Image 1: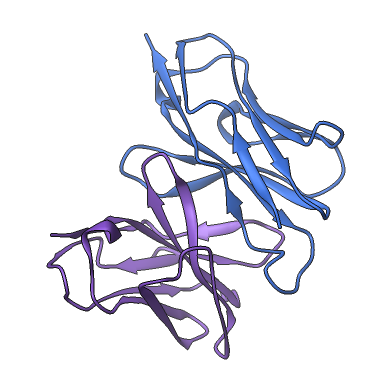
Image 2: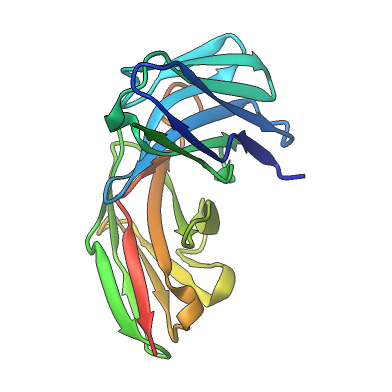
Length: 111
Length: 117
């Protein structure tokens, strides 16, 4: 099994719908992150969490919310999806000094 | 806060030629530096990292990078590229502080390396 698992891998949804992207990890890391990747913009941080009770906004949190259900699980929600949220979303975990371990990504299309 | 600038958005190069992908960073604190690679339709894979010690860091697939503190740079190099190196490369920086947002990884916008036969 992969160290960081994201589901679904691909999703097409309609404008205004609520959607949840899920992430689970087996690394045992406390820190978890959600990033968004757009062509030419690199990866931008949406939310990050240091533990179940510590959740923080990143650079581009507007329109998104998260839930840290357990040390190993970190979900990203779009309450009312809009087309400019079409992007590739990555979940990652970290033990701080050794860099991040990324999931395979979720390709989200909002139509 | 940290920031990263990747100076070239695209780098075309012929197979077996050397390549350098440039990365500059800005930070008010000491940093850790990373290069990640993303092959088409895949996730991100760590190429190499600088945490401390020797400023020349060797990574996977024959890549290496040199940390230059005075020039705030961390350029990625490979002496001879292969077609299979075609990918997008991301430079990233984090502060060495553990608390708050200092340890968050901040990415550059990426450099697309295209290796031609």
